[in-house]
Length: 169
Image 1 (spheres, one colour):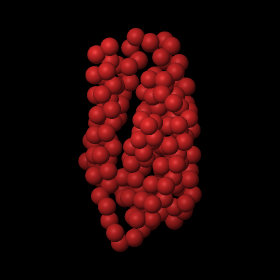
Image 2: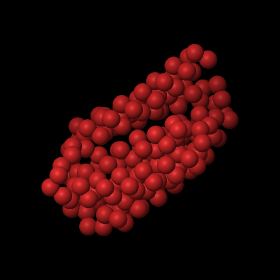
Image 3: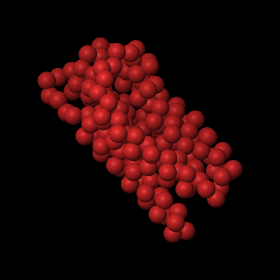
Image 4: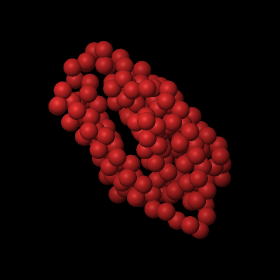
């Protein structure tokens, strides 16, 4: 269940970004491309995380909790940057998906279910990306900062929870 919820949380970051882009012409293609990358980067991250857990068995949970905390904090702090984006959709999709790489390193080190998270991240990202790009084009406006704060706080809480469990053991 943690993997499905985290896949949703990772997709919220994309929603926050894509709600700020009302002029995207190829919404379906961008949503599909972003969803695929939200599945590819975690495969790399899980592989790296599993490799790291074999090397750093004693420290992996601590490192994982710190990574999750820092990613959440970065999401919250990124709400201050308000620059207009005019880049190709492939670059935009890669940029929006890079955070799944670092999150999945943490999950790889925690030995969570890789494929459940990957499928969850891809499905949630596609659905929420397409919906947010459609909403951004309409007159109805949602502030992306609010969603970044929710995703950031959720990742910080997940990192803190992991850290507390590490200390208790």
